[in-house]
Figure 1: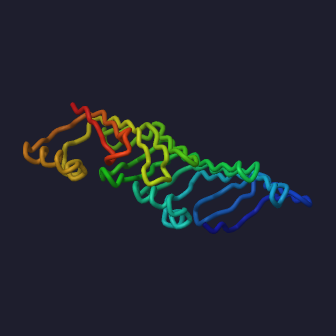
Figure 2: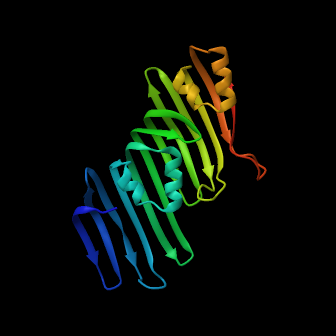
Figure 3: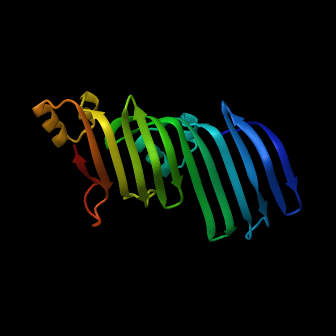
Length: 221
């Protein structure tokens, strides 16, 4: 992820350096770097923070991700803008941390296993080495509202554990929704030619036993 037009202060000593509000740009995306590094070698320690208030969720960012991160990205196909706070630290050879806080700013996404388009997204996501926390992620379009909260653990493994709650309000029973439904529910809607608006509380979860795919329960009214 190349950064250009870098400006700011870097303080060096024989065994350390500090970044003090170092700024740079990637296209229209502005970035700020802060942090320190010391004791180069086996006892290397560092703490770096990278922030942006207008990070583009685009192909350049996707191409900079690891293989597992790309798999997670592909599952949701995000687009738009976000504010980010990315932190990496190392206190010893066995103590390393990476966290990423994301504030969605009018973003878009479509979940691969339920391809209903989510537009005008706001809310917060928090990533660490094991989990993703979803906090008040809201899509609101023309009176229709979808709110997501919950957590995904083991998200970098072959079997992530989902515990996500979705509340929907005034969602039209139209062709877009029907096309996103699993086959059984899609057949039911088509058979009875359902129309109108619907509210629902949906729970997406991974069965506790290490068997079966991701499941969901829906209370629809």
